[in-house]
Image (cartoon, rainbow, N blue to C red; front, side, top):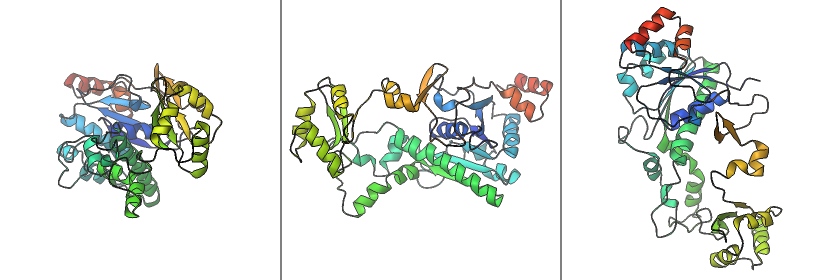
Length: 363
């Protein structure tokens, strides 16, 4: 059965990180996503973020290349781009041009700092965007510098997911009103939003600014990771009283035992031994798996949380829709692989396509 977004066409201006993540989400759920590649981009071979797309490679420095993007956008439902503010305008592909030609177009933009503001034109990466939200200051050990939580919070949670959500919300609005709109998805804004609970706790006087002094940042011994006899780690999240009681009981410790006491007991057995012992206990304990181990865990296998596409093990589409499920039709295409077919659908004949190749417009 087609995915929930079947029938929608999205133009994706090739970039890195959050833009491709949003494109993957939309494509996994059935949208036709046409990725406009640009020459010289360095990507990851067989990148799962690029699955389920069509690919056309254009030289946007040439008028004819930009004209092709305009033609694609003229009949598309949406466009997503992740360039610095002003780049698309300088290419004469900004929303002022494309939305004027197609008033129903949903134009999605994702940047680190947003389309305006003092830092709008500044360079940055996930760690910088997260730093300005205040949330990075809460991650890590006491009396040590903050620890970057990979690039998951700002790039993907605050950027890619927020852009995908914004696109779907605006596309639904367009179905009701017949009008498109521009989405300004700033990774700083989105990352800040993921911290709504933490800011709420702080406002209520239930969160201290000192790292590792709170329940969810490792300040409580029953919420954290411990090293086992084999050097591997066990995660513990026994927050509620009943889970906390079950955890201490299994360890043979008195309720309220401190971190050192817990660590000493957990260090007596291997990670997997503890995982087995807790497997039938409601104590919120789970083994900390390596990236190579996670796909083989029985729960992940049963739910098919990971799949293999083109020899690459990768996360399966999510979330799961009961009637219109997401799927992976194919892995990443070769750069520009679908160019001729895409142009053919726009009305270019074989001679015109050949001429564009000769001019270096179609790469």
